[in-house]
Length: 210
Image 1 (spheres, rainbow, N blue to C red):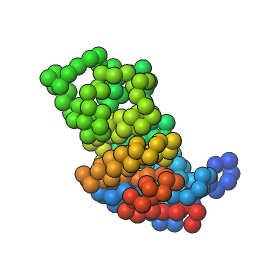
Image 2: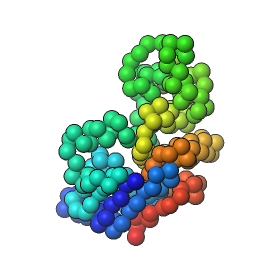
Image 3: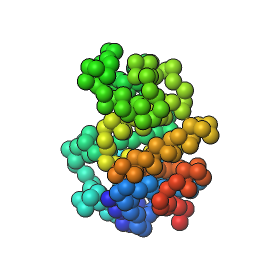
Image 4: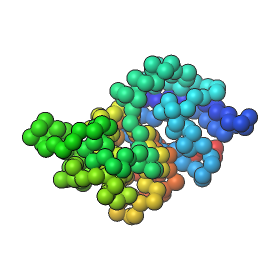
């Protein structure tokens, strides 16, 4: 569970985020909604320990991480958190499997002990694409590949920033279904979005205009 109280962030002397109370439950999709510029990405980055807050309290599983040490942030990113971004976060000249593992590996097959990578690819509808260079994938396929990376990591917390933006209807639906499946499997999923279909798939939404 992630909880925040009286969270505030200032940039350039201006208040860009002010949230009185926020909770993201385990096994649920929590949406951050509102128009562009209302602070959705800033809030998501603060919850994921990518940005520091100026005031308030942030707790993850009961631990106060309002001002985490570098060691605490690094451990959280390495062991527990995964990020899905609008620009996919994919390394174009790496293969799909290398993007999942975040390291160069060369070619391999299921019989060489990498079945978990292929299971993740199967789950997101990219069966047989593990050795394909990521630059040959479509935008929707790259976004699904980024979700496959979170599945392989078995992240407890998934932070998604406009994950369905610029995707066609079919791929938007696929990505939404994949994120809700991650939550159903026990992850805490937090999504910043202005996509109405994504909003409807959320268990709880927070309108940052309020």
